[in-house]
Image (cartoon, rainbow, N blue to C red; front, side, top):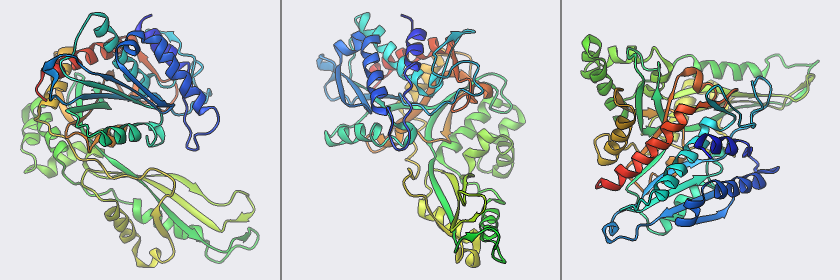
Length: 451
């Protein structure tokens, strides 16, 4: 069975994990774990397997040679849960795992089952070829990343921490080989995520007496909520420099050359001009500042009832070094003292709120391994450090390694990215080959490097 066929089979198990973890969640995750045992027999036969519950699947590849003594493990990770997918708008059934038009289609193809299949296939092939690693490797797969990763990556990291494990490096999803998304560069660009944003959900709440809609108050409380949203959202958050973004800007200058490249390489002396350049595209603008987006509005559940509570949810993505308390203070400051006495701003309960993890070095050996593996797979493209603007499971491992990197070995354009959490998610057969080849190279290079 080819890697594409294995990915198709993995997609056919609808591993949707909803916030309440209800329904058939456990049964589907267990089914998926059994499928992996069928698809990758050498991995399950040769590596130490830990499957303590449906949310965790861990493999330890421990060398028997004396040369491995004292070498910290390298951890490769992915997640096998997916977001829901309603069939409306899809060209195929979202969990059909159909192979057509030189692609594998279905929910999870990109996020993130190909990464898991690619890692396992790489190790399966290495084992079949008789490869013996010279350092330990850990393959760590979680089943609840889409709802925060508490029972998956969170508990795996906790177990390793309790064992006193220190990791040489961690590789997770995140950045990609971006095609047509970095202004001024016509070729695809390899992006290595050396940091990621944190995220919080700020809830703005207005409470009132409620009642019948035929007798509204003179001043509708919704006006106060709307005014608070307008004050918070009417201008973007301020630009703040981070180590990863500074390295990205200078490396981008090297790749571009010419006058624009010189301006970028002069950063931060050229900060105003550089910020103007990067603010033109959402992919780079979001690296410069905290972002904010209204994602939920709630009032009454009946058309003729005045709600006792109206609230709005603002999803905010925080740059490394930004504290949650500081962001909340900024939100309240923008509302002003009058509105702050009417509209309550607080962290939304029952959801994952976290600050950004520490950034990883762009000049260390772990970064060089990732760089060399990308360069071997795509010899002609620029490769840049990058700040991932979403949140990944890798943050759970920040305390176990100073080198946490985020990279998916796929060439994707904006249309491809629209399939992630959207309709018609799919991945090309070429990208499946890239994934297996990249992870094989990454393992071999990590094995040879003194991390």
